[in-house]
Image (cartoon, rainbow, N blue to C red; front, side, top):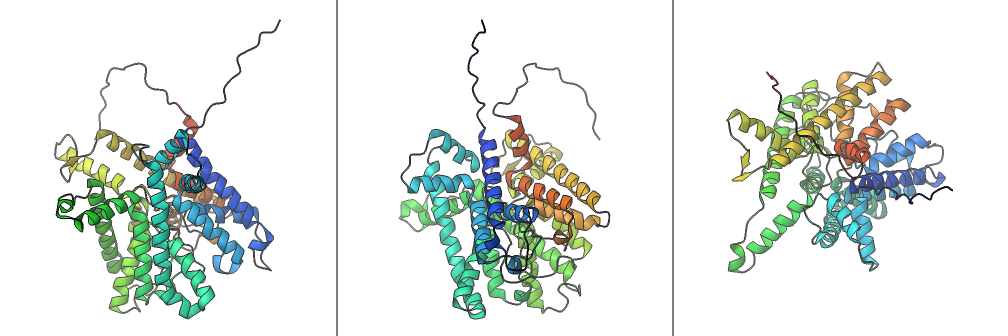
Length: 460
């Protein structure tokens, strides 16, 4: 007689797997919507790969496009892209949780843990309120950005289209997507409009600072303007101080390098006034790290500019924001650890606070895996078309994995295989290469059960 076996349980998905699959689901839904006839203007065709590429670049807030967003898609297609950018910027998990809260549904413990992991928080305490505040503040900042942008776009495009373009631009800039519906040359025609450059840069930077930094600064400012007792509590968290300092250093240093390299370049800034050169140097520095908007030709950039641009792309924005890259704090932690080693100090210290060793280990893993994955994808991309120059391939893949969105006029000419490689790069950049490893690792990781004796290895 055949014995009945115990009914096997279905293996539960880890939070990393669920977050990764949520982005993948949004991409596939977006691709399906973009393949609808009403998404494409008459006379144009949208195949599955084009729709998939566009949905991926929107959800992953990257900005690389294979067809011109301005002329290829209808108003419906533009709205789909804008919503995908918003979903990608906020996060599928966070947005879903807020919708459940709005319809008065109780959030389960599993949902709260998922929300905690999606924002890399330390505790589930107050995670629902944190998520609601994130969504609320995003809409407020994007609304202000749209109103300010309307001062430029409404006079140019008229009331209806001008308001629509302003909303699209504000969402795309804050989410660090870099996609626009203005024209085929991004913001190049606004290189002399300092107001729109300033508004765009502020939206990009605010999106890339991270939500924890926002709330910390807001709380500190609120305490400062409260009663005398509150002023004593005017203290910024070390994370906030570090992020603000690193952001300022990266923006200023990137602007200085861009100005020195491009000020006499006839393909970019030579014909500009001194003021325009300075403004566009700052804009290029900001967009290098996170956004993907451009005011000068990226193909026209000198090799040296493209080379240091790769480093700024790789670093990206700050943790828990809409920007990509390995993140400012991650890169700084590893650099500080190297300096501490050279100075024979046990732990790196900044603002009188030591970096935990676990944080350093995570930084090493993130930077090493990200660099190796990006380099491998660059090699694969060059294999798809032997005419692709190394600088252009590196620029494309670093831009994709860091979800930047800048290109040296390569994206539209990629082969189908090349497009799939960039789709993979953008997806990995949004969820993170380490998340992919954890995705296949499963819920539980096997720990070392055997303690091995230390070996003797030589370096240097």
